[in-house]
Image (cartoon, rainbow, N blue to C red; front, side):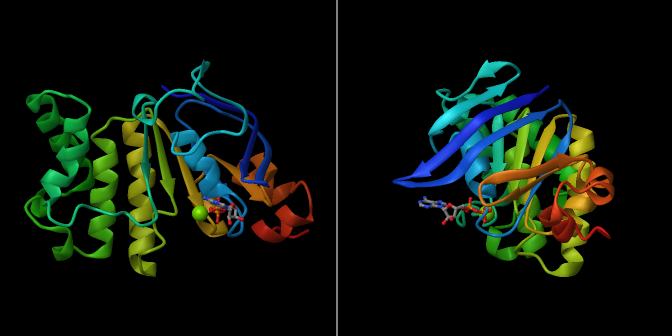
Amino acid sequence: MARLSLRGIKKRFKAVEVLHGIDLDVNDRELIVFVGPSGCGKSTLLRLIAGLDPITDGEFLLNDKRMNEVAPSRRGIAMVFQSYALYPHMDVYENMAFGARLMGLSKAEVEARIQEATRMLRLEPLLERKPRELSGGQRQRVAIGRALVRKPQLLLLDEPLSNLDAALRSEVRLEIARLHREIGGTTIYVTHDQVEAMTLADRIVVMNGGRIEQFGSPRELYETPANTFVANFIGSPR
Ligand code: ADP
Ligand code: MG
């Protein structure tokens, strides 16, 4: 279960403010897509939620609990990055086991979680391969598997398809939608691609220049864009 609230979130790097006060409430089990042009602050916001970077100002709540000072490993959040760096010297099984072992889980629990992630992502035939023996799509599935074995209540995906070719992209996108439903948690998916956003999201956060322009369902954004930026970006007929 994961409900999250962002209240007046600001982020400064040195003197430069890149997030100017983000307010957002996400329900449990929603698949939320952050979309917006390159440089608008999507990855920065995701990193603040994951705890990889400190919040300059404002508050982040997960199930009503303030998370600002909570260590990343204690947030129940897993993040899959754009460049899904797998450990090159470990096989697929070891790549998935590594993070789970760091959590202090028993051997049997690690084993059970890997089996489950393996089934969900159809990785059975690949468990003994090294990353260099995998295709881009397979590597990305392993990176997602590695996140899933941590059983996160909140799964963050930062442009997870950007290193894949067009055919694989639609395949992995469907896989992510299916996984989201099967896990039953909350997912935040970041992309700069409007089509991806419109096809995947329960609700979309349209970002621009460190601000939220609009938050709503794909249909709401299309039919009643809040302004010309949203209309142009989503491609609605206004
Ligand atoms: P997006 O993911 O939407 O493409 P980012 O969140 O990566 O955008 O970047 C938002 C803005 O913050 C950009 O102007 C970027 O240059 C700046 N930025 C991101 N990370 C840092 C950093 N570590 N130090 C300084 N500026 C940064
Ligand atoms: Mg980014």
